[in-house]
Image (tube, rainbow, N blue to C red):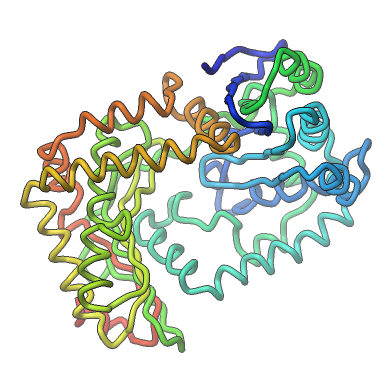
Length: 423
């Protein structure tokens, strides 16, 4: 059973024992990400994340950090999203003190060395180019701009090439000092924890203090999706490629919406796996695409449902007709009792398997803390999934899948006029 407490400096801490594992994951999640930025410092959250691995006073270089963890076979990494930034070390339980030592040192004592910042600019710019060159990733940028316009949620997490070039050490340091405060973090220790874990957390994470200047509520709220003409709801990027990469998007739910359980069931039935309606109709029966899926994107105050695929650009019209037919069907007819039962069982099964992993448990409780009023175990979530009815799914589908709210993003060799004709 998980236990929630606070360290002496106010850092929220959650301890999650997991039987049957010898691993421990130590994770820190911060309430800061790209939506807390503005157009001038876009990419700063992601840049700061990179710099946490570039050396401290105790461990002067990247190699000092990585070798210390590599020498014991630990897994470690970080990630930046639109609403949070995370760091973790997964390690054998006997070495959990090392994980806490290294992670706290990185977060509290990173140097922000000028030479490292200059080098890392090159790394990040290449990362931006890498994702831009990959149409499967780049089409996500197109749809996000269509959905969220000039709002922070519509900007790339990594920023722009020009913005990264212009970012100074002072920009990075000021942002770090304003956001990386214990009261803006949550620490989770999950796995083979023991009676020493809380004391170690206090020793390594409980002595640092810093004023909070960027809090979890310090973001520009997304007001609403703007009604626009069909042409303005279609975004096309023309490239010399063989496939068309497509995302159809509809306004969804905010992260803590009570209807999120019904939405999980809905998207599972529509495009959640190899037996989903879209997979069967688009891939198995018509051979239109190798990959197609429906997924939920959600934030503190808004969300979206994406249907994404990569397919033969000469069969776009057939694909759109097929996808639209399944969208219309789920919004006008009750799903069958078997589909409903299978979807619930599928979600529960995936969650059960995922939660065997200490990393997944750590991230589950860390996100719960940041985004919900109370911690919810995955067993509680599964219980709520099981209560979803066919009528819940239908009623929600009617709300989500409104034709006038749909956005479409396409990267292919075809022009926008050709794409619109296919739609």
